[in-house]
Length: 106
Image (tube, rainbow, N blue to C red; front, top):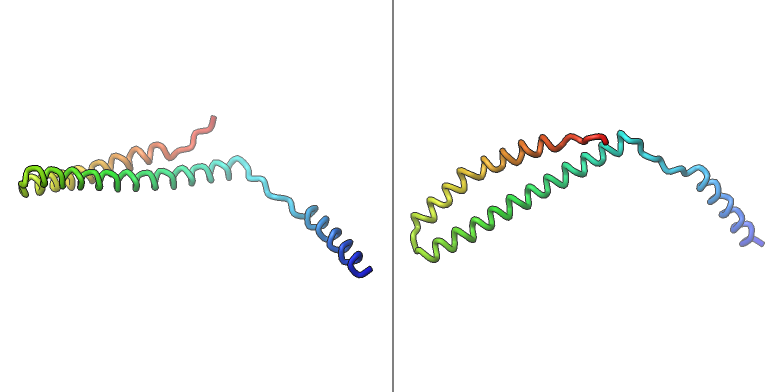
């Protein structure tokens, strides 16, 4: 008998919880905000991966040139060129990124 009362009580309480627990449905503004945040996070991660890839690729190319030619001057010139071009590429990517951040409504 005690188990039946407990079972009935639990069922009635669960029904009350189900009735009162209405999940909130986000409106269009909230969805657009979440979408823009996710896009910004995705682009940030993509930019980091691209920079890391370019850095690693340039290191491999530099090592290959150094190994093939045994010329330290070529290695130093290549590193200086990379250091000169990399900030320009980063600035161009940031400029492009700022233009794409806006969410367009269809």
